[in-house]
Image 1 (cartoon, rainbow, N blue to C red):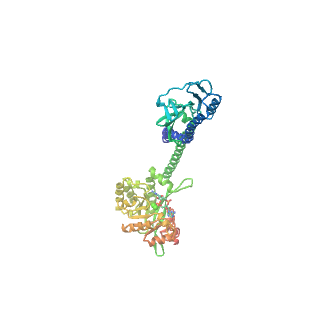
Image 2 (image 1 turned 120 degrees about the horizontal axis):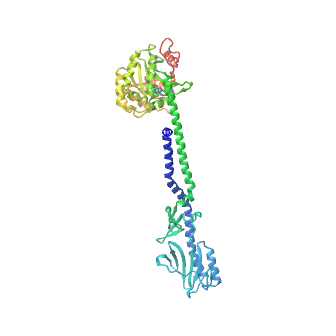
Image 3 (image 1 turned 180 degrees about the horizontal axis):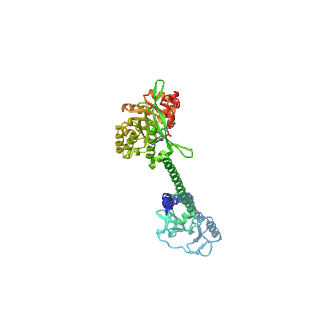
Length: 508
Ligand code: C2E
Ligand code: CA
Ligand code: CA
């Protein structure tokens, strides 16, 4: 029972696959049978229409060659006609003087000429086709010298293993003629189309036995395949779940044992011929106990999904404040912490953050929050309320990855954002053919008009830096100025006298 509870989703996937396999059987069988039978039917219809026409010609030609004497020669010619036509079972001749003969008996035809209602006779001038029980029965040629007759045998079902699993109807002259045996089992129609050149319509019907005979194995294989796919999918799903559960478990342990550390990436402003570090972005680093470095892109989305992100942010803020209170910071220096929408929607966030700042004695102007759109805000008003309390105390709010999301611009004002961060993707192309100059220019124009500060991130070379400064970007961040580093290294980039020694900035 416990097992079932644990694997409900996987079991449901398999049941769903089995149901799909079961209910799609009919459609699949129908399609397969249609493909198979349509080819055969085209050949068959040609063959059958040809055979009836041939019988017609044969009967006429026979009537010109026999002497209407019922002599040996006549019997021999009649025999030849029978063996030359698959359909013809019996040939006889009825003379006006009541004398008759057949291929078996020169004295008397074994089968008398029956009387049929006119509705069962198809008249083609001197030739009459007689039908009985919707099947072609006889073809008769009337001449003044006698009546020559072919009696047909029923065409054999071309699915030799199932005599009564398939039948064909042909519309002749407004009448429906049925070929092959027809049992009482339910049939379904698989083909309807014109036959031969004379445009008679044929329809083919098949019953379950016929379907099994024709495509049974293929349909079974299809069903097995669908169920197998379902099982594979379920197994994949389970593995993924276990992996995710494994990672969330590890992440929880990492939070508990304080394995997540803030690294700092410098944010600079041009000064003289070089750059001055005016702030830094806190980027979380997880150094797992096995020494393995786990990148934030792997665990941040997971933490955002399972709610651990808020705990991580709290822990980072504690660590950051602990770092900052240990040194003297330059004037107007800021440190940005990434926060997810859920963090700002919590009712106690503002109070909690301000409390932490107060406890550590850090000026709230130093703290800045970066919001990304990776997850959506579920209650923008709650976040706006929280942000208002924070900004009133001097905390700055930055919009991260600007230009990459959809709704970002729409809540710039609602969320009291004062700075936008231009994403790396717009910086990457500078100096190359892929430069998305229009987007970058319009973001910058928008920022100017809205009186927003701008930080450009992901700057990797001088060309990018020079271009952005020329375009009016105030602050820059990226590996060109310094990678994210532990606090002990970061602090050397702005605290004299060792400043300019540890990060790249100092080398500009
Ligand atoms: P982000 O906020 O856009 O952070 C910038 C990312 O770009 C960082 O990746 C940084 O290491 C990288 N980067 C900086 N300069 C360069 C450069 O010149 N070239 C290139 N190629 N990359 C550069 P990182 O540290 O792997 O972080 C990835 C993302 O994870 C961050 O993107 C951020 O969205 C998220 N993240 C990191 N730490 C936190 C956190 O504490 N809380 C939350 N909510 N998200 C975080
Ligand atoms: Ca960021
Ligand atoms: Ca970013």
